[in-house]
Length: 250
Ligand code: MG
Ligand code: MG
Image 1 (cartoon, rainbow, N blue to C red):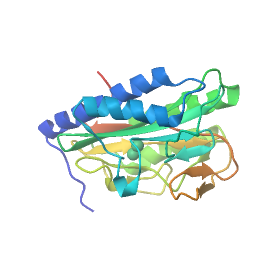
Image 2: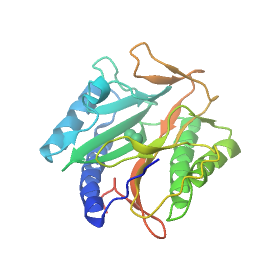
Image 3: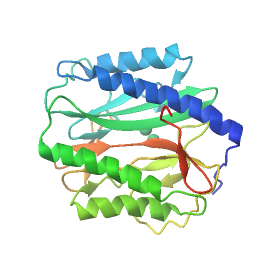
């Protein structure tokens, strides 16, 4: 397996792409409210990304028809935005955004509450975000992918949350999906992270059991038991003693 390491200059380019993703998240977070459709959110994202001279990475990727993935409640990932999907008070919505700028990709997902959400959904959001940062905390030159997946698994198991096992993180650079695949649980993966590698880490957890089903459109992925799911993702660069987040504004 060959995992590309980026130069300092390439990492700067990735940071630029990542900041556009972060700006788009910031604006969508403000726009999310009961009554808005996921198609309207998609349009906002398209306009922000293109106004920054970037390209929506997902649009046309394997035929995906939109700028963002918008996945509500029991939908985990890959939701196609639609005029017919109107957010309601108490929903949670996972928004995944990719932007390509100067040939480099930023990829980040976040799950947002719509108005007031119940305590179980709050717990799910808090713990999945915590799992992302616990996984990131293992990252440095010399750590392994098993450390990353293990940190996520530990939080899921300790809190009786289901883990989405069929999808995971990945290398990211000039393509959205590069090697390696990053499991969100321990598989004994001894792949070593090295300074200059750029990867997306993205735990997906659910209140119920592990099983998932794919929708008839072959995109949307749902929890099999109908329980709510959450998804938090950052693109990062591995450094000598930790990591730098690409998909943030500082
Ligand atoms: Mg993503
Ligand atoms: Mg990703």
